[in-house]
Image (cartoon, rainbow, N blue to C red):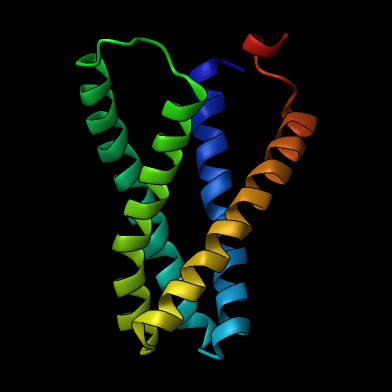
Length: 139
């Protein structure tokens, strides 16, 4: 499989399964209808992908202007924290509005999603590589 086709397939499957699982999980946590949590999961996915593109563009713009080059542990940690904090700022109000809950409840739902997606990403990558094999870069 070509690297571009692999990335497209990975992204589509990752987001599709993530939306379904997160939507069902939010329904269980919040008591809201699966339809509502499914829509908010899909909207959250769209926001996350857009934020990913935006944040990484801004981060790399900032990074090119730094005198110290490379990606140290501190720089990688700052990148991860900046991304997650920004995503939380964007998603918590959306969750609060769509699910008709307080910002605190929405923030807690968002934290649950963060933990879920760390575990989900790890497991999804294992499964994806098992089914489709390792990419050329890992061989």
